[in-house]
Amino acid sequence: MSKPKIGFYWCASCGGCEESLVDIAEAILDVAELVDFAIWPVAMDFKRADVEKLADGEIVATMINGAVRTSEQEEMARLLRQKSQVIIAYGSCAYEGGIPALSNLFPREQIMRYVYHDAPSVQNPEGIEPQTEFHEEGRVATLPEFRSVVRALDQVVDVDYYMPGCAPNPELVLSAVKTLLSGELPPKGSVLAPDVAQCDGCPRRDTKPADLKIDKFRRTPWNKIDPEVCILAQGFACLGPATRSGCGERCIRGNMPCTGCFGPLGNVRDHGAKMLAALTSLLDAKEEEEIEEALEGIPDPAGTFYRYGMAHSMLRRKAGLPEVSGTGRQVPRTDALPPTIAPVPTGVK
Amino acid sequence: MPDDFQPKILAFFCNWCTYTAADLAGVSRMKYEATTRVVRVMCSGRIDPQFVLAAFAKGADGVLIGGCHPGDCHYIEGNYKTLRRFHLLQRMLGDFGIEPERVRLEWISASEGDRVKTVINEMTEQIRALGPLRLPERMGEWDRELEWAQVPTIEENPDANAPAFQDSEKPIPEVVR
Image (cartoon, rainbow over all chains, first blue to last red; front, side, top):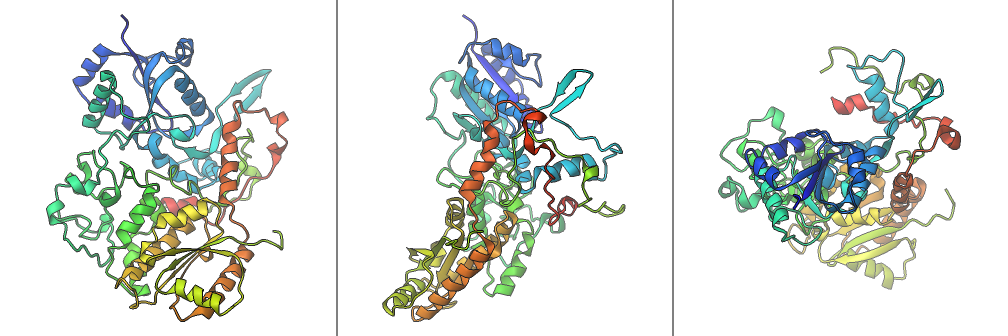
């Protein structure tokens, strides 16, 4: 009997999720004994054509990491959906949009302009930008389209399970793999992590005062964190109270506040709104001016509270951005445009 | 923008003060713009920021929150919690492109029926000037790009030479720094 096939694919991701699979260490050999990989671009030489040859549903489970930004990622997600019995959104980006989804606050044209022209490290005197099509001497070269919106995996294809984390930790990965191989599957739509808040398992739980009050929010670069005491009680925006547990509280153990990569608890629709409510309620200030001052420690609320969940948030994207999208429209060359971003002077921090 | 644009404002009024004030405005037969839909909550502190986001995501043009004056909260300090949340929420909504005028917090006591009238009229005017937010329609438009299985060629696309959008309000380098 042939071994069950599993797949591991990446979309808009940093590669950390690929690392996390290898982080299960020797256990990966046991897993490799039990399964065959149908596709794993980072480690094995299977191509898209190999997947196309498989029968529908022939892959038992495919774990897809990374958010979905390009047309190629959409196509691959759809193909893998067709060929797989189970699709797992692996890691924060596939689950909720992750870091790439923060770019939903900016228009595609601005991102292109910055990345290919205005970034201080870019040298592009000819002003070349990627085009979806390029014709030369009768030949055509194509590139996938860069979409206007970054999406979580379940906004593109049907997803069966979610594995949170940036990146998911080895214990969680191993238990998920074991569950899958056992055949006793949890209900569809489950998040494969405990449905309790971080604070529940926090090693500093006992130092959290019963009546927690914060005079003002502090930022980690400029303030020392006491390694023994509840980080939230010290005034740092620790998102533990509104974030799912299961990560082993690794950031807290490393003396950093929780940034919320495990996403919301099961009964919460919008992670960022819930965190905003949880944190600001703790402030001591009562006068408007005091409140404003206390909130100065959170200069970028959208980036703080939706660091990993912008795509899944209720608002999803900045309103008022251009809505032209997905039409194959070529991004105009910037030499045709007045410069809208002043060049960054050298020596600026 | 059409002249007859009737904004949709979702109002959350606290049971003890603002809702009673709205009631007073009603029994006093005050006339004001028919743009609000009122949801009664026990305390303005009950208003989860999720409610506000959900309202916008489902098509509201504005959200009005009404609570008791500071010091008058039936639950001692529910309205202070609202105030703290409101400040950051309003700032965060700005990041999402939702103008600060679209969300408003007012302390209106049970006797201030005329204040309800003034606030609703004022807010209606401000939102009328801003125009509709139409987030559900926008989200539908964002997702049209998913309908394209293949990227069409340039010849097929009449918009190919349309000028690029220029967003100069928030240059990227500042954000990166």
